[in-house]
Image 1 (cartoon, rainbow, N blue to C red):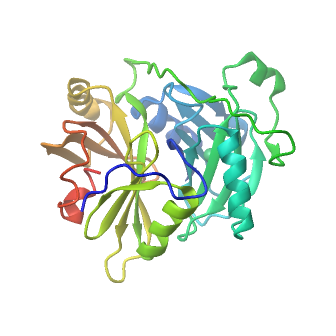
Image 2: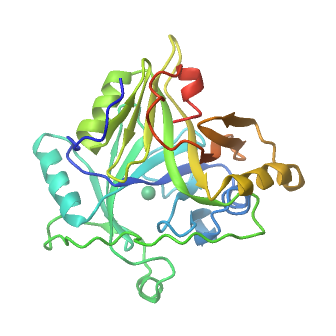
Image 3: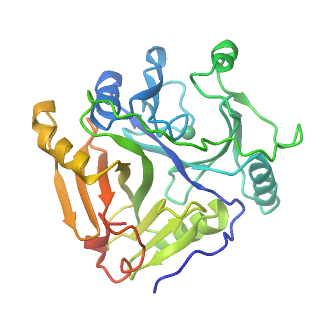
Length: 318
Ligand SMILES: [Fe+2]
């Protein structure tokens, strides 16, 4: 069954996935991979804490990373992998309103003022972190940000009246840096394999507020109000544990992607899998920690037809 765009039924009304934050092992190889290979050529690096926040113009960061054994992390980690998925809201009104609705029903969040965004954090049913945020309008490149620069601090939602302004990036102009292998324009989604499928589906719709856009036999694709495929959840096979399967990044066009694939060897990068389907052209590469990134261009951007695919085929096409 295909489900067309519906109104969000969750506490929040996310526009889209804004970033993926990862626990890494080593700073320099991770910076090389996400900046020089994936192509997130802008952002803010913090060598002192081995952290990076990289973008290509769509947001303050599409990828964040920090060592999994750092003393400054929010949730204890057992190794590299997914820290959290973050969802961009329209404005602070949605953030504060959703926070209060959730709290009234017993769903608790940590709250943080990051200067660039107000954020609230929780855990999904698998224990993966979830961040829901509204931008403040400051960017890492902002003189105000540099002047104010400080560690993130606690935040009291509704201490001041929330702003109804839309402060996310309105005009995305990605850079094309010839020095990078791929040229990601932005992160567009995350794919999770779940051993608690029904609860996961319920969490991402009723708490986060994403909407089902494709329902297959063993998977569901959820999207925000921008019409993307932001989180896809696949039912784990018997005995299989929940895992972060991969994240995906759009690139500007197919010719650019072909050139990147052809040049991968010269960059010391192995393309683990190529997708050459009537729906999509893509290449799967792996971070130094083994996290998979699918770089892709859609030949058919419509959701129609995805629902009838097998899970094995759909996992690289959603
Ligand atoms: Fe984050």
